Amino acid sequence: MPTTLIALHGFTMNGAGLRYMLEDLMPPLADVVRWVFPDAPHTASPESALGIAALLGVFRAKPPNLEWWNASEDGRTYNGWDTTRESLRSIVEREAALGGGRVGVFGFSQGAAVAAALAGLSEQGAFPKLDFAVLVAGFVPRADAIAPLFAVPLRIPSLHVWGSSDSFARHAPALRDRFAPETRAELEWPGRHVVPTSGAPAEALIDFVRRHSADPGR
Image (tube, rainbow, N blue to C red; front, side, top):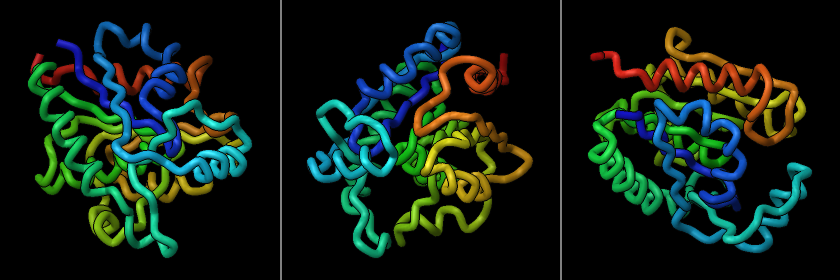
């Protein structure tokens, strides 16, 4: 039975947009992964969609423009996090039942921060079990409700990916360091704020997912 991989899109994106970004990664993993692309439960403002596109030097994501949370001015409160967490809890529980139990999480940008938070909750027994995490262009969540989850390095197998030409990439190493060295891997590639889907970087990402999608009991 393929492992279920829950793929979480970035800020102002949507599930269909991330699926389009990852379409070249999906065929090489079709025999081991069943992808799920949920939409974030909150609508991002038009100003947010334009602002993030200008900040990252990319085109505005196609609507609907969604967000997993919206940070307060001081970054200590993530408005919408509780709804996001419970929505994803329901999805993971449902997909684990459908897929035979093994579930990984794949996050891009804000989705990577969400995925990291879910991994932290999972290790504390406050969220369904997650078997591995792929975190692309992520950052450490600062909200008071989430930051304590990283007080001790997380031991879930994790792959941390960022592009050397990504203006947002400076945040990714800090997230990597919240995961235990023995169970983490990293991949820096010469790209921008996207997921690598071709060449050696994509092959390394595919290899990680394939290895950690294997059922250790078989």
